[in-house]
Length: 314
Ligand SMILES: NC(=O)c1ccc[n+]([C@@H]2O[C@H](COP(=O)([O-])OP(=O)(O)OC[C@H]3O[C@@H](n4cnc5c(N)ncnc54)[C@H](OP(=O)(O)O)[C@@H]3O)[C@@H](O)[C@H]2O)c1
Image (cartoon, rainbow, N blue to C red; front, side, top):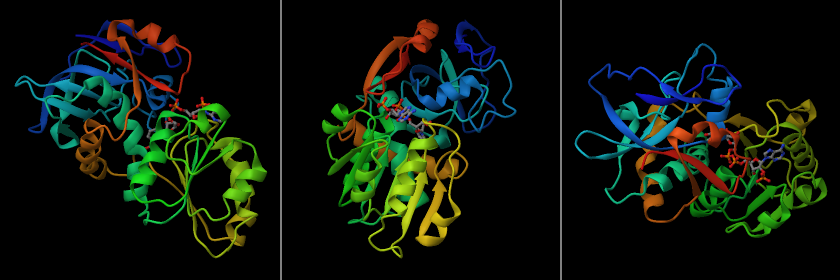
């Protein structure tokens, strides 16, 4: 088959011949891949820098999820958590226990662009922690695909206040669902509106997260009120400094949500509800479709967090 193939970490994948993946168990079937999102996580996988990269080896087909059609015509959303055979190929083997059948009228591009962005905060708020209606949420990195969806997910799960923090003031102002906004690095504003926050969904880490955490911790209205900091991504850097005093002076709890801290079973169990909400129009990330054979061009397109590149064969 033809596939996007990574032969060297850091170089763009090329459209090359690659061995067909073979089903190995009773739960595995082959699908013709129709669409696969080029998420930041996929760039990390292709660059060898994701925490799951160790030991996966090269060459590999990138892509962590996609939409495909089986021999019987059914449309599936699937996750490809096997490091070697990803979704950016003509065909993929899917584990039906990690996949869901979509309604026949579901748009493969819309699902491939949106589902990963929605499920990130959905799983964090429902599975890693249990957000209660009426709690206040702050989203760091709120103008990106997952950040924008996180604002909506938090509101739909019953959050009272949802504070959106991002680096682009114009896009922040246009963000639906946010009850307040602050520009990344504006620590005074973040300290003020963050005083009564219960949960932070952090897609940035690095310096912006360190600054925001220090500002919020120093200004808690009630230091005994739990502040749960959930890391989901590292767009601003893989490390941050965590002052010991922050942990002792307030009830600060830091944890992460992602592959590993969430089991495959937990992640799969939530997919049907998320897929249904996308099909119903509750969540949408605009797809930027690029044919699979143009994968090298897709990789070179400038970063634009207002849309999601989707490699497709439609
Ligand atoms: N744990 C999970 O379950 C899970 C699931 C999906 C994604 N993620 C992770 O979440 C993160 C965001 O993914 P995404 O899909 O939202 O990506 P995206 O659509 O490309 O958005 C990236 C966001 O990060 C911001 N950003 C990038 N570099 C920055 C910097 N140096 N300083 C401050 N802000 C910066 C962007 O700001 P602009 O909008 O101004 O460009 C944008 O808001 C990634 O690390 C991804 O791996 C995690």
